[in-house]
Image (cartoon, rainbow, N blue to C red; front, top):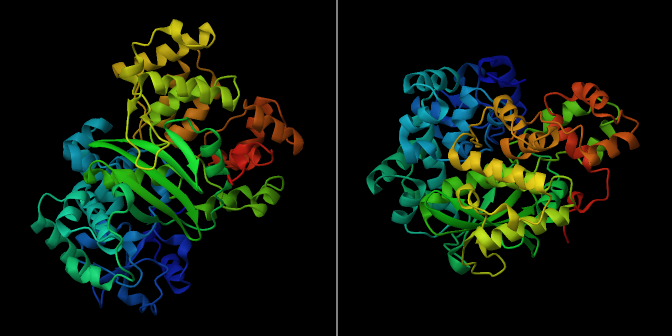
Length: 494
């Protein structure tokens, strides 16, 4: 447990002295003598302990007047895993801020989504992160701006617009304040020439992650379950359409040594930060594999599986409502049948898009578009038709909301209350759509088959009791159990 780690000075000093990259994103080192802040793994000679102070976020460092180190680029560290392993107010707020809610709806919009007052939100974030929602959103805009300045040849005006700044002046002032360099100086220091926009107006970026990272199961799962027209595997990349606040986009994600190559084609550059956030969430890139694998290795049954391919991630989603619909379509049918059912809905009710590279044709239909579907047109058993229509009716009517801000236990309970929703459907939505790292699938056929082969209890109740030692990372244990099978979801596509 590393929550509040920045308050443990001795431990932070040890991490800085050992340049331990596992702690990047968990805390930041502010150097009192130089006025800069660094990530723990910064390659420079560590300062004296009396000259270091530790803060919980890049926004807190910036708010305290520290500038980002030009060597280690601490603002570009992977996000804190803390926000993806918790369902409390602060974690839910941070996931919404990363999804651009403050930029689009302001702090009142953030508070309304969470069901708290703006004052309470400010107080909670300041207490844990040393910065309020506006400062956290500003830090995110600054990081997006730096990413575009250094990796593209886009004009500065376009970058300011894409990063979410209200004006060129605010963009210039923020970049100078945070990085102690003008935008032009930042670009001049970049290691290589920017690429601008490629074919079809695509932007090419790198998404960092904490090592180790085994991409086989996450990309294998996404490719094996890809819905035609919405997703595809092509030339070593997983590609899919994205429904974004200001338009649509297409993401192409390719595993590479030390990063994920990300190519984004957007109809509106303002959606860039949100698209990046959703791609990171899809691939679970902010996970802490050291903590996850360390816990799972304590079980002698799982230890060999972890050692064989450490750093497995949980394949998640870019759209929680979409995944819920797909989970219902996949009840008690094969992967191929689920894809066929979803493809029919996409063709009939999805919004068409233009793909410059061909292959992708639609956005997955929103619940409102599916709410009026005639159940008789659905080629599935009557009970599953009723389950699907009930789900989309609740989603479209707002009586059920699924999002990055969902309260995991409460949402799971609401799902189980719907007709046709058993434990498997609710749990797979919790695991992949809601992002609960402790979601478990004891009734899943693949999990039970793996358990039996490994000598673990295979009945749901007994397996759940045995899995108690894997908490709070049972969703990752599922990935290691699934990987014992030769199903295509476990294999990086060729």
